Length: 267
Image (cartoon, rainbow, N blue to C red; front, top):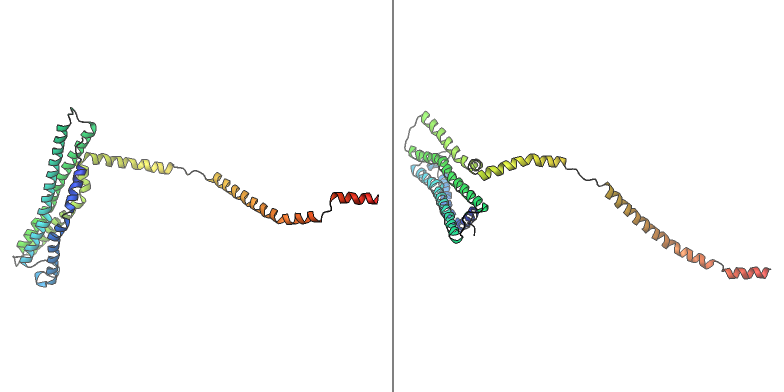
């Protein structure tokens, strides 16, 4: 009895989350859509560029984004990772209790190494998500507070714009960091990636060295067969046409015994 793999555990977690996706969408998706409708339908809550100028609307938007886009996803990732780790440890203890094995097999060692790498990758993703998302959340809180400041200098506005740009850029960086996180964290991923790049020249060499087998001989044989069939068909037609003429010629021909009888009479 082998310990349950991390892929199977993640598959079970995914099936459980699918049951609650509709309720989660209603709880967090509908309020966001309603907020956008209210903001863009009332010009007094925003300016021409769509920036929130009303303190209440800005506060609601900041709280919604912080809770729905930072606190809630981070909590889910941490809880799921901890549960996965505990589940793997529990399965490993159960296996060790039921099976008296002095030393684990090579397959079990590889599976344990893979599980540790995946858990480390999950924790690093959580840390990376927090680091890259936290500046945007802080910027939202600051913008909400800044709506109460009526007059701000040009330098302050320029600094706010630059900070907002950097914070938003960091937020968009996280979805594209998966490849780099996998490469830096997982030894298995690095090994498979190196194998992939090494196989590219081999595939190209095999492609260019592959020769197409000639098809001249089969083509000649096929043409010869077709010609023989055509000649046989023509021969059958000619034979069928000549048969009545041969029968007619046989009917007009004088028998041999009649010829002999006529010769005897002349003698």
